[in-house]
Length: 393
Image (cartoon, rainbow, N blue to C red; front, side, top):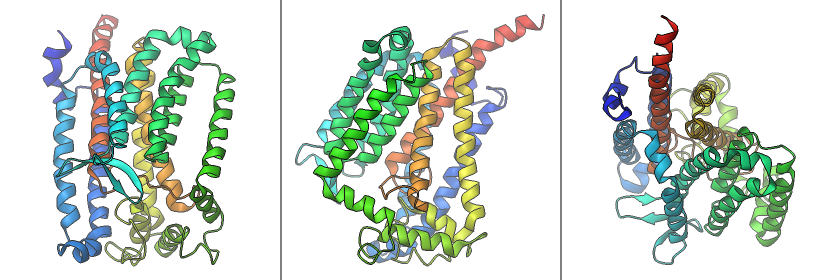
């Protein structure tokens, strides 16, 4: 039975021996919490800006339905298709990242040109580029794993492809996506068996790049200084304003929160409350308990992705294993950075929290990634089923 003819069976809850339910249930829970908290955080600003308190909810519901349809369609696509087009996807991501830098094409918001205005929707190429890099690198490691492990040239080759993406992201600028892409690619190469000492030279270059960036762009240094002391008089109403307001939201929430809809910080005190800082509103309305539930769901999702990768790697299918590892790291890095920014452990950076923050790009790509994990899980269950039957005889 081929994977194509077996694809419709993927919709059965038992298709992956119960594991399918973990991924899907966690995703749906996060999406439900996201719709609830994004709406709570955006009601006032939507009413004042658009005269409709549910303006952002309506748009997010549209993207939610679209994301679920894309996920369902993705379930029907075999993984060898993504292996075959991984090179084309990588080239497409480079072209899109370059396209946002073209005057008149790239849509600029708050000094950053990260979007392409399609009329009804602002496309953010960096969201897709991160996943397309995972596809290409997974295919590369599947073909050249021994070369990557055994020689410096093999180790540095995929780094050159990463450098192209980093340069394009730098000029947008989108330093958050840059950090996530670097962390994910380094993790995938390390998990392939590359020697740890070889990362030392690359990390030195990265540190030098960060220092050079801080020197060339003073606002980066200002943001770091405000992060170190956001309550200072010169920062509390400037660079440190978002962080101090987010910390106030966490402080007000305490253990169990003020209750749904009772946040004060969303009333024009905390900027971007329904996007980058939605976790602060969760903390204010549901306290430490609510934040713990959200983080626990992300941990379950990431752990399940790593578990899938480990099981698939044991069967020898390195491409699918590295894709699972890469997706796990994409979720882990983005969640870690967003949570770190919200609680003041990392400098303020505009990064969405997957499934919870308002925005179509993040939601569409996040659902697509979960669907890819489910597809990997399904194909692994098909390949292991005949072995299980032979072992029971």
